[in-house]
Length: 308
Ligand SMILES: Nc1ncnc2c1ncn2[C@@H]1O[C@H](COP(=O)(O)OP(=O)(O)O)[C@@H](O)[C@H]1O
Ligand SMILES: [Mg+2]
Image (cartoon, rainbow, N blue to C red; front, side, top):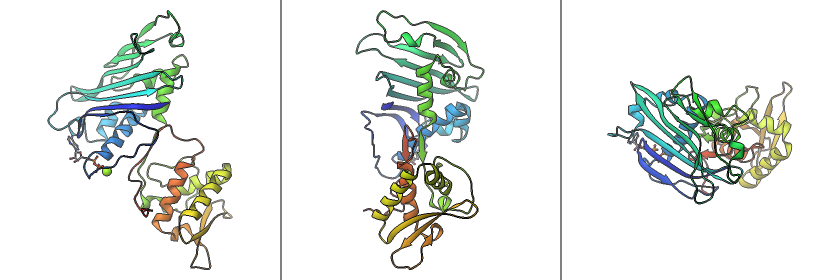
């Protein structure tokens, strides 16, 4: 599944913004305050709106008045155009407004268009907690097929319909889209959080701020040794002075990363290694994830790394 177009309305400084023809790898560069972090926050916002609800995602950003573009009174809108795994183009549109001081879904639509012409099928079409959902999505695309709908009511007008419906097998495409959003990852790596600590634990994916890097390293080391070795190999090629990295399990089951610095006889444990070395390690761990995220956004990837 691939995102092809993103439209943003009334979301902070984006009064009206469109991103088109998004390639697999997109680099966003621009002056301070030009909206790079806000763009990433749109992705985080959608994810939070789905996993929690719209009211909570808005509240965590200081409330509706803070979030909506200065001086605007209209709804906040996000539209994602994507190609589902069957290759068909789909559009998801979400409009959020305020009813009696509470952020609610004014409109939520997931629609598919067959071919260039033809009327799109609305798989879900909801407003303020009420709407319709398709009941025969499996016939979509078949010649002469007609869509059937069912009226549904959600228990909360701030919950997304794709959250409720995405849990049922008969809504495969809705579930696929819901999965896409739920599994995308916005990395905002903070070196002070990521400095390996002595805590043991279990984690398969790097967290947003990178504070579980030791656990993820251990997971890779134990369950995906080939990937772990590949990360170490790139490390030793890319970081001057680090001639070798070894992972040594300690007696109590923790993994200690030891970096061999060219100018010292004894290896260093990761705690004493430079910020850049740890950042490099974290980037490589993200890129070698055995179960890659459908969307991976990395905030300020250049931090701590030397330009070359
Ligand atoms: N509700 C709002 N309406 C209009 N502009 C806003 C709103 N909230 C924040 N901004 C502006 O958005 C900008 C934030 O940009 P940001 O995404 O952090 O930039 P970057 O990451 O590119 O440095 C700031 O200039 C801020 O004043
Ligand atoms: Mg920023």
